[in-house]
Length: 493
Image 1 (cartoon, rainbow, N blue to C red):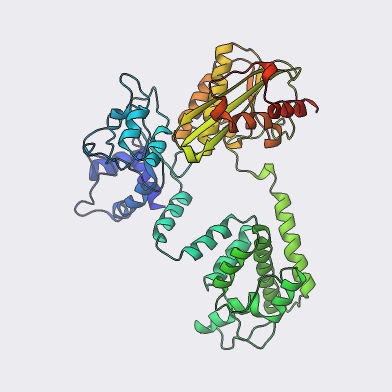
Image 2 (cartoon, rainbow, N blue to C red):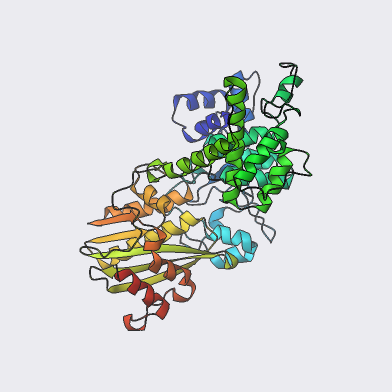
């Protein structure tokens, strides 16, 4: 949270707070180059201490590239490393614009591939360049919109903090937080696995209680491991729930049991296990505080019903959207346009060859094929960036061919939200989104919609084969058989 204040000093330079701190602590530089100084205030000392956290995800967005040093400034969008390591000596005093083509603000792929490893070269070639910007601005690489968030900074800090920790435990925590179960159940299991649950054993250690017997069996001490797994009542619940495949023997702690369970069952079954642990804790609290006894079948039914209701509630109306979905969004089948043409766009990433491609299929109101085009580009990019590049190419095709009524469909919800939104995105992804917005403003009767993958099969096929289809236009009567079957299937609806 202190890092966010540092980000504001760096990003909102015209604010009153930024001007005051700059005048007092860094009159000839910025927040990143500032020193603690003599007799600093408590607030400045706190914000200054968060500088390393801010630097974890801070990156330069490439424009002219004249003020970004290749081996010093953080400019790679990768969160693993911010500065490339050249394979040749002598680049220490060169700036990023040295990697551009002569008199052209775009990457010189031959130079980049000669100077850097294949991995770094792919990352560099995938970085969009701001063609009109005069400065190399900052952005936050851990968020798609390029703005600092406490959540993403915390995740970066934790990844760095636990980099050398137990990899098995780290793997389990990552699995836990991605499970499709209610957050309150994840929180309960996280506290239990960390031995932070208010069990009788823990309360006795803190001298809150004097007896630690399990309220469910009244035999063994109530620990997290015993209450949620080892107790006969708990194990009866697992058996009734059909989760007896998970073993309960030979484990010394709840965390070790969860790690072993996560590696031996599917994510869906693990979600049921987590929910049952949450329901067991709820049953235990009902007994302790309300003297209400729950049967095994009641606990299992409560766990299953709670999970099912939560999953059903996760509809599109609960998505945190940059812009609201429209009525025609989310189509599951391809539908002929009522008039004009429809362009279906998709992208593909070819990680092994450090490339990414796009495909676009254009059809008219009769469902007839108007055009098919694809492209392939060098560089390793994020999925949303590849999708936005494909949309930009489709918009450029519309502009060049002067169509007056068209619909663009893509299965990338993130891109559709970003293009429709009025919010400014300062990331590299936002740079391409701005290009899409600018082209869209100059087109008439052109809209963009989100559809499910099942309604975008034709574009998906072209994108996946963009390596062979790029820069090649085949006649309508020589369409590949697999592609033709997709077109015929679409038109059957």
